[in-house]
Amino acid sequence: MNVLVTGGCGFIGSNLVKYLRKHRPSWKVVNLDKLTYAGNLENLTDLENDPQHVFVRGDIGNRELVDHVILKEKIDAIMHLAAESHVDRSILGPEAFIVANVLGTNVLLEAARHARLSRFLMVSTDEVYGSLGPTGLFTETTPLDPSSPYSSSKAAADLITLAYERTFGLDVVVTRCSNNYGPYQFPEKLIPLMVANAINDKPLPVYADGTNVRDWLHVEDHCAALTLALEKGKKGECYNIGGDSERQNIQIVKAILAVVGKPESLIKYVKDRPGHDKRYAIDASKSRRELGWAPSHVFEKALGDTVKWYLDNRPWWERIVSGAYKTYFDSQYATRLKG
Ligand code: NAD
Ligand code: TDX
Image (cartoon, rainbow, N blue to C red; front, side, top):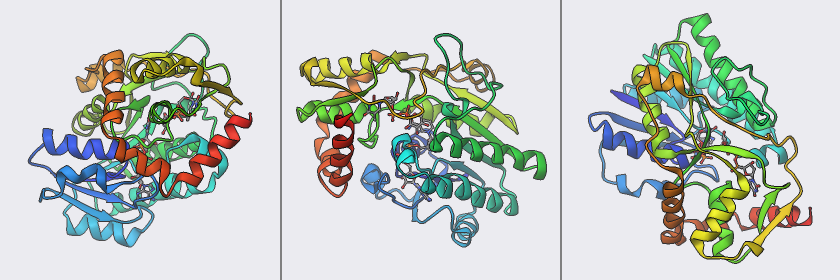
């Protein structure tokens, strides 16, 4: 099997490329990534001399390049992860999200259709469902009701993908997962940002009162689910993937401070994110039943291990927060802390 992974130098993509090389050793993994601010080839140094991993730097929106890669590498299936992925950035500037997530996905779908690929796996998100109240779970039939430019661009891509099955008969599967955590996450997202700030004795900016709830899924459990969805998912179906680990943001932040050994006085409550979804929670029973998947990580232990990974790999994230992206991080803090 020759699989094209898009976005394979990002957080989930790089974990997935490594997961596939380990658990599906006969597969060739071709990794198409533009290397935006969030893409980092250093995430894949373990695979430097691996002939079964082929890296191609390029944009999913470049149809000529995508066609060429599919033909040259004899691609059978696509696992599509490349995206602009950060909600706060989508509020600062939605356009990049529409270009990469909506138009980029459409280019890949067209290429997959014309090359008659055997499967197109669209990695979507639980954020397409919008927000829950204090009770209830998202199922695959929950109506889509996205709140942010990010989640609406993902919902658009998710629906276009499903339309390619109905209209053109392309074999597609859509997965919708909850918040991932683990190694190599860009330090703009809640967990690595809070770890980095705690280590550097900087304020930890918690939006509103910190009671918003996310369901946390370890990235390796997500990679296992994506692999099974590619292999066993039914054509034209959606699969929810969740970690059964609902936590309030403030619980996460306090747990991180405890592991790093820093005081809770570093917590700074700041102005809320506009359109901030209150709660996400996932019913993943369809994935358990049809894919034979279940998460294997226990949240508190895996969060501790994740925090330790960031403590042990300081150069990896320090280069990001103090290097080329320092201006972004500084201006973000300044804006948040004013609130
Ligand atoms: P990320 O931001 O860490 O990585 C995205 C990768 O895509 C980067 O390597 C970037 O260079 C690449 N990329 C962006 N635009 C591209 C383009 N036009 N052409 C080629 N490559 C491009 O993102 P992530 O957190 O790893 O998320 C991966 C996917 O999973 C995304 O589709 C995201 O919407 C989805 N998702 C993420 C989470 C989460 O918790 N992180 C949860 C649900 C769904
Ligand atoms: O500084 C912060 N303070 C804070 O309180 C940041 C960055 C976040 N938060 C809150 C907002 C959310 O309630 O923490 C929660 C998690 O925030 P993010 O890490 O930005 O993730 P979220 O907005 O939930 O989206 C993530 O999960 C779904 C990913 O970024 C998406 O790509 C994915 O689709």
